[in-house]
Amino acid sequence: MSFRAISRFFSALAVLSLLNLPLPAVADVATDSAEVLRVGMPLPGQIPFFWQDEVGEFQGIYADTLRLIAEELQVELDFVPLSQARLQRLFIAGEIDIEAGVSPQLEVPDALQQVSLYSEPFGIVNEVIIYRPELSFPVFILKDLEGQRVATVRGASVPDNLIREDFASQWQIAQRVHRGWNQIGLINEATALRYQLEDNLDYEISLPYASNAVTFRLHSSRKVLLPSLNDSIARLEQQGELERLVCKYRCGIQ
Image 1 (cartoon, helix red, strand yellow):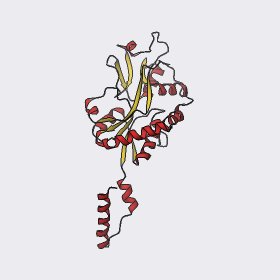
Image 2 (spheres, rainbow, N blue to C red):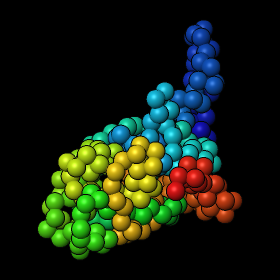
Image 3 (tube, rainbow, N blue to C red):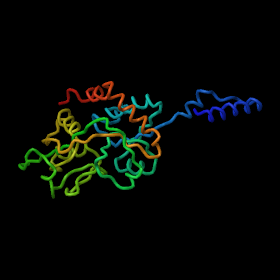
């Protein structure tokens, strides 16, 4: 609490005392004044990065990284699961404060870019093409897909030369390619591997066509937090915590 807020608080206590009214608990006031960051989580989540488990807990590399940062910044987190398209709309409206795993290199709508600040990178995500095993042409780079119909996540940025079919999630794309309902899909490498190995989904995985540094997208109304956010990322990297979290969720899946 600021000095001015503390002064107002004790002035209020004095008035309540004179009026012989019950005094509020100091702990309650401190809780009410705690800063809360509203975190947008794209539904239905992306294992191993960010998802909500069967008991409602938020798990993954991004969730745990945010918790470590929040502890350093002394802020609370409010995880808000949303579709990717709705997450963008609420972020633009200022109803979401931060989004994890964002690549600043990808093009986004102007309205979103105008309210977006980006942290220092805290990780790398490889993007891959998944495709039906019977396809005979080499699907390794995006130029091979020019004019092809490709399954993509609604709201995600993809090259303009593709004929995109939008779906709700990477899980839906993986399932559709596995079942043959789509021949080709775009998802990230870690997710493609996990679905293929743990869920026995049948598709081929290309070499990465892009490797994107990922950051936190912070709403411009919270710009005062950006230097502290970057300092926290640097400390966690120096301490080896970011690498430890990646290994916690990814070591052993390949």
